[in-house]
Amino acid sequence: AQTIHQWPVAEIKAVGSPLSLGCTIKGKSSPNLYWYWQATGGTLQQLFYSITVGQVESVVQLNLSASRPKDDQFILSTEKLLLSHSGFYLCAWSLAGEDTQYFGPGTRLLVL
Amino acid sequence: QQQVRQSPQSLTVWEGETAILNCSYENSAFDYFPWYQQFPGEGPALLIAIRSVSDKKEDGRFTIFFNKREKKLSLHITDSQPGDSATYFCAARGGGGNNKLTFGQGTVLSVIP
Image 1 (tube, each protein chain N blue to C red):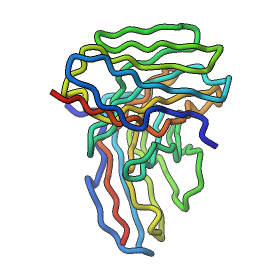
Image 2 (image 1 turned 120 degrees about the vertical axis):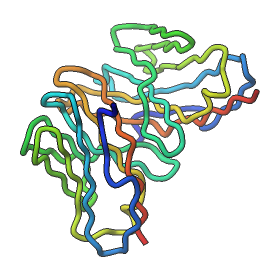
Image 3 (image 1 turned 90 degrees about the vertical axis):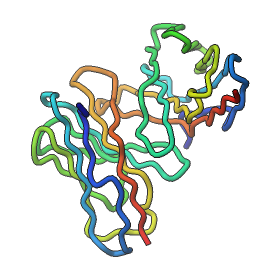
């Protein structure tokens, strides 16, 4: 059974439109959660992290926001997409006090 | 500022050979170095990791050699297989409290049968 689920799998959106990406972790209690962005053929850049419900820290400003409404859910969103938002969005989790981060399958976003 | 650098950008080896992927870093506070393997269209998967207190970590065909003084590490893949063809990312974590991983640009490995 997959521990981490991301939705949607892929999106094609227009510039200026809103966006909401989701991530759900199953079977892990109070995980640390992370959002990463990866340009096509590029490296991974951490965007946000959260250690508990309702608490999200921003690492990089990219006109995006994140929220953690439930212990097992992490949401990435924006009200107005830019062309530069295109890429691969990855959610990751780790257990508190442990080093390893585990990545989800990702969401491919194309902004036109 | 590129805090984690990888070389080469791409590497091609024959099946059965040893592939050597290099990584260097600038921040002395980095204390944990995972290597991730990523196939096209998938999320990265942890391959092997090392802490800065160790100089070597082995797991099957994968070995990390770590030189703290020179701020360098390398991933050795012995007996390379076509299924090892993927992009490999070196990452580093500093003591910033957010468990932030800084990734290198990746090395694309191709293993020819």
